[in-house]
Length: 193
Image (cartoon, rainbow, N blue to C red; front, side, top):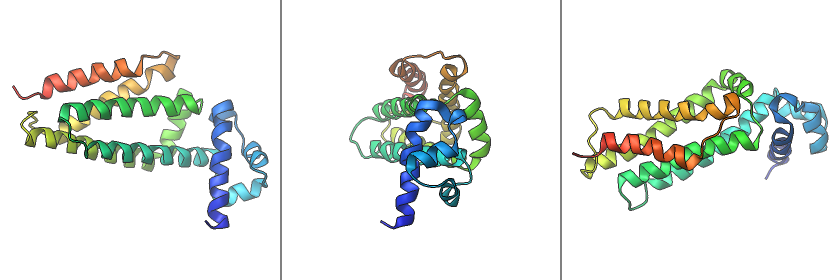
């Protein structure tokens, strides 16, 4: 591992717990630099801002989620179970990340504007996995789907709708309950009749 990638990784490893403890808004680049044992200027050699550091952390976590989600496709299980596992994983991943890093609604909105490329990439990759699950369900005769891209968009919109309530007013729903409700809606509409 090069010294450059070691410092990059150290910044991310150091910033994560600070974001978790103080939130994105209250954590400063100075605090990250001090905790990492490097100068503030060194941080700026790797990242333009603390938001960019957080975006890198989220990008890594998101890629881990996508990799796990793709593994669902390798399992010898019905498409309905694949969809259930994906939904549990998707909803759980968002809530776990947001809670772990003490992310507020305002921070999510701010980061969303700054991280459009990340949001777009995640949306696309998530959509590919969902489309593959639906395609398998159709090929196996387990589901009826007239327009996979439209159904995928509807599913993704449902995920987004369930992501936000706890952030907006601190409300929470049990992750498993959310996922089960959503999967029930999806499956009842997609099952081969």
